[in-house]
Image (tube, rainbow over all chains, first blue to last red; front, top):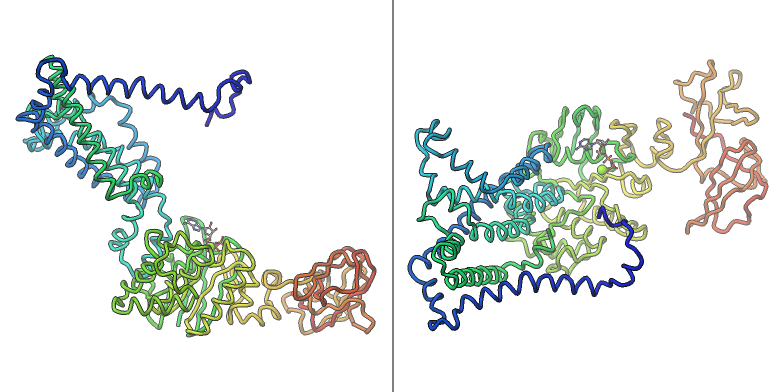
Length: 280
Length: 350
Ligand SMILES: Nc1ncnc2c1ncn2[C@@H]1O[C@H](COP(=O)(O)OP(=O)(O)OP(=O)(O)O)[C@@H](O)[C@H]1O
Ligand SMILES: [Mg+2]
């Protein structure tokens, strides 16, 4: 918007039509998104190697299959925990404090710091010589474990959940809440019957973002988990850089993407996502 | 029925309502009238329990409800924006209040009864977001009444509607109130609305009560200049009481004859303090062939036809405007020289 009034030379304006701009955008997408994915799919099929589709057989068996299952399990768990925390936090900021901006800044601030550094920070926090163990004498199994990875991802993705939830909750007309109270509903009932449904679009958007981010997470299991907590991204990376098995890495990527899209499609049949994102 | 005693509300340091007391009888239609920011909404929301008063008590049906949460006061409220739940249908909106009042069994009958009352039958399954502004107000009124609250509170429920619709819904509110005889407290900054709806008006200004009474008593016997100017239209003159003649107010070349008893004691005649005179437009006569004790030369400066009558503005020789209510399409034209006259008894002296 800042640039809206910048002058565009007439010669440019005359030659560049919206059609050109759309063509440019589509071309960009085709070149850097569609084409690489096609290459990836082609690679995964392993055509010409004598054993086509063997990579898919491997990817859908044993250790690899478990990793795929684990990724989505972690993704769902992280999403649930993150949504609960983000909802409580947003509720507090919207309805209980007068310092909204301060809290929003605190939410966004960690995003300025690289993930790897934040995960390492969490690791050091729970390490045997860290402050947490100093205080409690134990890390409660938070280090190199499932709960460590989920906690790490929750902390990392919390801002992405808070922002849409905060937005939709803050947009609720206070008179809807007042009307509910005067109509005879207690405060809990009002949260359940009015605040929750009116902030649902934010919850759905937040859930989707966190689910996609966390089930594809690479750094959290790498830094905060053990090899038993490896997720799909770690497996793809290992197949590629350690086993040099490009077909397997590509097959894992394709399977992961298809499952993710399928899950979103199923979800979309229950909740109209188009409407949700329109309302944000 | 409803009794407000010494209500005071501070927002931080800001005094919004100051030591306000009034009461409303069962079945009354009362109006809180005052300019924007005078504390009307604050008062109404305190009664509903949505705002905690700094001081004072609120008594409903003889019970002190000052510390009760809003959901336990059995109040019906219509908000300025109608505040219908956008995620519920019309019927669900009405059912919400009914269920909260334990009337689950009567949802169907009450919903159709009250939608019928506001002439919205057949809209049960409509989304509230798809209703027009006027329809939303109607549903909102039905929602507030369906569980038969002890008192109905309306906070400028006609805001944002065009003039025709405003008048139409205003009349409907009056009619509904008569029909079900619900005690009503209405909030508005529109004196016309207040005069046409209520049998009791409480005039607020700067968080304080200026005057309370029937529309007639406010219009004919305003206690102070604020009420005189805020309630109803009038022509306004200033002047000095004459030391020698108690029934005369002097202003330069103009001399006004007034009812000596109407001169308030608070403006002593002796020190020559300014007094303000008000004359209602329907008490002024144009082109006086008869004799009035107050008669002045005037020039017509503006003629407006407002449907039922015409409003004529004239100027006295010293430029003071005079407002007159006359028959439609008077035999006058702008710029014309004429006279205006009124009786001493019709002059309000403050
Ligand atoms: N939540 C609040 N915090 C601080 N000041 C407030 C708050 N609500 C209202 N006020 C102030 O209190 C005064 C009274 O407000 P109120 O809303 O009661 O006025 P009102 O008579 O309803 O006006 P309007 O006709 O504009 O609705 C105003 O000066 C307003 O600025
Ligand atoms: Mg108000």
